[in-house]
Length: 43
Length: 260
Image (tube, rainbow over the protein chains, first blue to last red):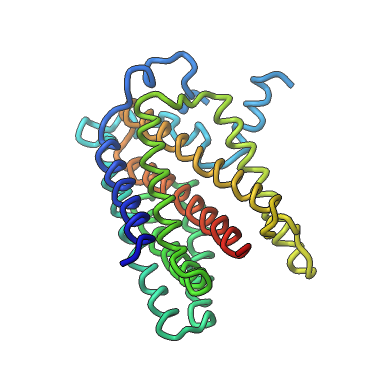
């Protein structure tokens, strides 16, 4: 296994790990309580 | 044209996945009890299922290519995957209640195409596929954290920009595709010169920022208590963007490697 596999394989693990871990939590308050949010339901 | 007129015109005519109608409350919103409502965890789990399904069929065509060494051996699978994926994506967009069936089928179809495409690139530029996958999933993780922490705040103008840029890129690719039938093409799209690489970088940027729209779309739907089937729809929209991002990164890396 070369450096290419170690570095980019690690990036895959970290990226997917981050997605599956943080994806389960709600966004922070500064993201949720805004007046200029996209109104997905009001069109 | 005022800002709101522009939004009405372009915002509604862009990528159908980003249309507000996708989350317009209908009868199913009222009928959904707490157990039948969309959650963030459910959407993340379903995205995982779609990624695994895509990987299974991708591994199948990948192996066929490396066993035979002949691009012709995977060409049929690639076309089935591309055309089947396009049809299933359109069905999912317009019949989102069916997403629980069509989204997994879409992932399987796209896997057939991606496995073949990836294998052909890998044969020409060894090591390129793991680089493209690493950059794709790295971008996914980083942008999700940036979104969740409020570092990137998507607004209506942000959406307008992404939808307009995506529409422009799609039009450019379509024109280039049609020109291909007449033996010509838009040169800079495929060139490995500075302009071609700059264009690829721009497209990668737009594809990456589309992920932020997907996150916002999923977060808002879960917050509003959308029905359970929209978990599949949210996972599907993430898959579409991830596949686009992966292919564009693959093209960008191939252009860079072909300069050596």
